[in-house]
Every structure is written in C-alpha cells, then in structure tokens.
Length: 442
Image 1: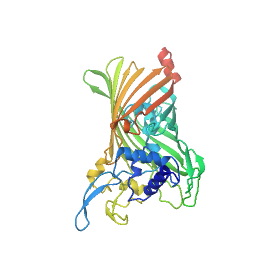
Image 2: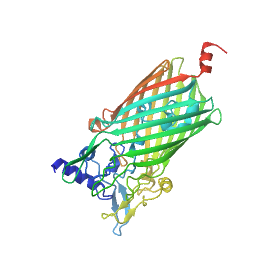
Image 3: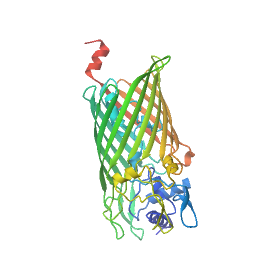
Image 4: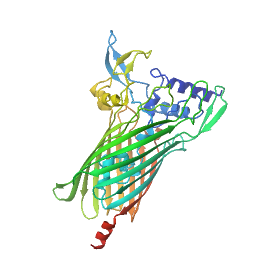
C-alpha cells in the first residue's frame, strides 16, 4: 500500500472514532461529503487537505475543577449532520446576497428558502429556474450542485411549486486492504420536493413542502469490514411570510417583509442498519427585508437572515469517550433533537448564541432589468469556517432571467470555497390578465 493511501486510510479510520479523532471532520460536512467506507482512494485525502488547511482542533476544549466539573468550554464544537448538500445555497441570486432568502423578494427559487413566498410573486403566473454551482473547485473540479425549481400560481391567492437538486461528488476508487482497486463509483445525492402556498390576507401567507432525499455514497460497495447501502429519508418544510407597504418620509414607495421558515424537518438517516443514525440539517430561518423604490428607475433592497440548525450540540466527554462531562447526550430522536437544540450546548446560552449564523445582503436594481448584489455570511469560528463575502449580478430581458455570483472567503484562497461561482438561467411568464393590463385591454 502506498504511503498516501495508508495516510488517508488511517485518517478516515480515526474519523470514525466519535470522541478521540485528531480532527473533527464532521465540522466540515458543509464542504466535503462524508463516505462510510474505510478503503477509498481519493476523498479522504480531500478531507485531510481541508482539515490541515484550516488548522481547526478536533473538539471543544474545556477546563475542569479537581472534582471533574466542567467550568469553561471553548474551541470547535461543530454540529453534526448528514446530507450537508441540503444546506448549500442552491441559487445564484441568494448566493450573491450572502445566502439570504427568508424574506427576500419572491422568485422561482423560493422553494429552498421559504415556500410561503410564492403567492406574493408580482405579475407572473409561472416560472422556472436552473442553477449550476461548481463546488470546492480548489480541491476537485468534478464536484457540483444542480438545482431546478419552478412554480405555478393558480390565482392571486395560491401557488404550487417543486424543486430538484442533484449533488455529484466526482469519481472515487474503492480499494481493498492491499490497495488493489475493487470498484469505481461516482457518489451522488438528490432531493425532490413539492410545495403548496396560500395567502391568508393582503399581507400574510403560509406554505408547506414535502421532500424525498436519497444519498448514495458507496454504490452498495461491501468488504469484510463494512457494509453500506444508499440512505434515504423524508422531510418537510413549513413557512410563514409577511409583506406590507410602509411609509418612509420622502421615499416614494417602500416595503417591509418578514419571513420565518423551518426546513428539512424529518427523520434521521443511516447508511447501514448497524450504524448510528445521523440528523439531517433541520434549519430555522428568520429573514427581514426593506425594499426602497427611490424613483421610477432605481430601487434598493436590504436583507438580513438569522439561521440556526435545529440539531443537538455534541456533549463533552472524557478522553475515553465513555463519560459525559458537560452538555447532553445527542443520540436522541429527531423530534427531541429539535427541542434539545435550543438548550443543550455544553457552554450554555453563550454557546447557543454562537450557533446562530448571520447573512446580510443588498441588491440594487436599475429599471427592474439590471441588478448588482453584495452580501456577507458569518458563522462563529467555534461552529465552523463559514465566513465569506459574496458579489453578484443579474439581468432580466423579456421572459429571461440570468444571474451570476462569486464567493470570496475571508481566509483567502486557501479556503476550499475560494473561486466558487454560480450561474442561473430562469424563465418567468406573465398571466394573460397582466398582459392585457399592460396593453390597456379589459
């Protein structure tokens, strides 16, 4: 066995030790998919490169008294989830705004952020959007996310919507203990969902979506030490959306919007009957937007989103991993995990606040045809390395919508997310009623 493969095998093996691994690879689940087989040729090296580049410790450090009580908690204690591809911002417009979407102006991609927004889409009856995101280009140029979303508004009160995302992780080669190639496979994950949303009044709407998720990381590869199969589960989204015109002095038109959504609320996932089931990334999002129409041609929208994963925080264990020193046991049911996520951090309320992620974005439109965007996404360093600026641009022409965004990590080009770009192509169609109105017909 060559030295590179031996190193990757040992690193991956240590990652399966829940409490004593040299790096907590799960902290980087949003960047690198986790494979559940010891003998793989390439992906563990990607994870090793990521961990070494970021120089992040394995788990939370703590100070104890002479009687063993934990009195201080600090250091990385990232939340652990399966299916991290569900947390990647799938569309370009949101990607240029720092990954905001809870209350941003409704569009075809609202399914991911807040399904309740669709009834408030202005003047359009149906639309579709396709986005491609090359992911982790600094590590591998064969990893990418494809996202297709669309909607249809029956009338001014209700809409149906659907989306599909497909995440491909490049090609890997499975080997045996002697380093001999046994199988070649392209790991992939996908999710398919449908939603329904309805306005309850002139200012408030609600929506529900149901999702099927499948993750195939090994293609059923089995050896003497592990047996794997594709993991699959179901989840639901629910959202509420409020939008209302407001008065702001000399500004001709202004609008405030508030959105609250819980996404990926569903069962835990496992790739084998004999393994511990993992939480999926259930997320609480609260979004705010202030839109200002400065004049006939110029408008600005300011957005702020707060996000929190509704999954348990890992507790702090002793060096043997058999005694819980602080926090709570995180091996609980999915419903209990949601409830426990609000109070179980070993560092108390201070650590719970660290689990809240902040996104901010500003969007400028000229004549509703050309847009310029900028944003910032922040995650506390004890919970992960997601800190980056974003920029983007958009163009609307007739029924076509074209968007582009670019991500700029705060840690520079050493970040696996450096040079991340997104491209979207959308189509929005007006209703017959809107077309007649514009032509001055009854």
